[in-house]
Image (cartoon, rainbow, N blue to C red; front, top):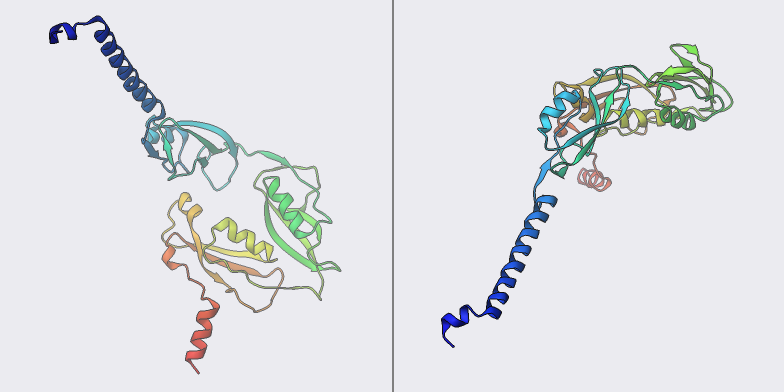
Amino acid sequence: MSIRKFLFNRITANILAGILLVLALLFGTHAILEKITRHNQEITVPDLRNKSVAEAVQLVEGRMRLEVTDSVYVKRMGKGLIFRQNPQAGSKVKEGRRIMLTINAVNPKKVMMPNLVGYSMRQAKAEILSKGLQIGKLIYVTDIATNNVLKQLHDGVEIPAGSMIESESAIDLVLGLNNDDCVTYAPVLAGLKYRDAVSAIHDNSMNIKDVVFDETVRTYSDSLDAVVFRQEPDYGDIPLLMGMEISIYLTTDISKVPVPEEDGEEENEENAGL
């Protein structure tokens, strides 16, 4: 059989056509799947915090879908600005990913004031935060039970349970203080962000005196990322009276944050001095 007859043989032609069809389907399917899954096409989520939704839309340039899913009310933040985002800035996602936004409400939310009287300070703190409120000042008075809540105040006035109050409002707590159980110690705050530092200070029955940001903190977003690099009084074994105040200093320059010495290093230094 000649080569010409072989090439035009019906069976051979059908086989070749079948192979070509299979190859075309494979390449087509791969191309479609690659486009659908955007294979290896990840993009970085930008930082949208402290921006308006309109500014965020321009920033993502249609590469992601923005959706406002929740709101909070922060007095010191501009109304309508983005407070939180999920996924966070710097995350790697595929194009078209939905970014959920929490914005700062134009009008403050109202929440119901809980009854904290009789709670321990830790229980009261958990209840206050769960309601979207904040702990204000810890006021200690002589009582048989240390850190037992005796009164709850707002703007210096007792606030009854069930009252409607703006979210993020500061609630002062009047707490008992037994003379036999009135000592605390300054916690280690270096490296903590503002909210975590405040939480640690309250957990140690102390109050905030001053919050000082250095020159690296220029915007509200910077303040969210800033960490403590100095505190007064410093942490240590010196006993302090519950209710004392502590000042914190924050920066975005991590190199300013002191690295605590390990016990082994301290022992080596002591031994070297002998």
